[in-house]
Figure 1 (cartoon, rainbow, N blue to C red):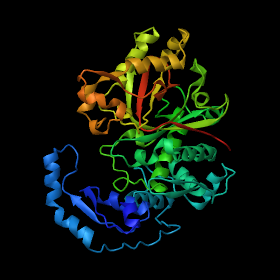
Figure 2: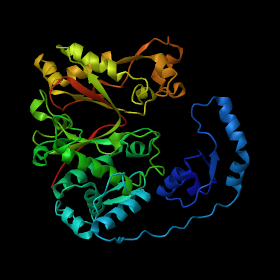
Figure 3: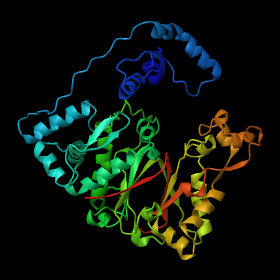
Length: 436
């Protein structure tokens, strides 16, 4: 639509009720100040072809108007550079700030630390970068992610200055095209970034890699505030505000904060950052777009095959968008195994490498074609040419859930007992060195 309009060809964007704000915000992000909308009463999902045609025909007059009549340009006032809040005391003023920030979509629902000039200046002491430095242009709203804006959101989240290098590196990583930030940020699914920290900085900052590494509690203080800052940065710099560009249907508590360190001491293999091409001992952050988190409960198995079979049985979920998406060719959806140390030790003690485990999962995490054919993961009409034969294949044909063994990533994290997690994903993980 944007490209047509820029070339002088009139368009109408079809959307459904509840998504009008999203459509206008998206157009604005791509440089259009005006947009003709055809608003449908029903989302064009879970509808038969007949009902789709009926819905479009009912709106055809509005579509014609959008193509033939001028659309008014919406003029916006520039935002204020600073805001002042008053109350009977500092606490009352802070509470008033919180109410207004939340009303404007700038908060995550939890109390915010006021980002005063003094607090922001204090946060900036954690980095050698200039406040005006633009780290990246952050999707989906194409906001300039300056060091100062990162610091402002870090203050609100409760971060310490020493957390700044992690946040700067994470923002860089999320802007890598492989991460697919726009899809993670605006999806109607519960997608969110997860940050995985490796190297000496994890201990320096007391980032939890053991029990309850994904929180809550005092051991996960750094995990919590760093993850929370990333959410606020996505909202206030990337403009992924709920109901405007973030169109999540139900949501997930993972979206408040998701950050942990790998338990390298309990890892029988090379750590994640080495797998991703960095040298041992380099401090890094790996960012990955998570869709959902599922527990892998296995307290009985004592062989790699049986433990990994529990993962394979968890991974082949027809409801996960990563399952079978590779059949459409342009979707590289990776997944993460968060291995409890006990599970990792058993697999490693038997001489299995990460590659061995990945190969096992690839060949055992299989799903019947029927679940993809009639579900949402795969559109049969978009099958890439080498897989068109599936259109005539028996519905009980077993297929791998991912495109290659190395689309499964193994990370060791957590405390005692054999309870692990499996993260379904969107896009590929990206690792960035953390520099101070």
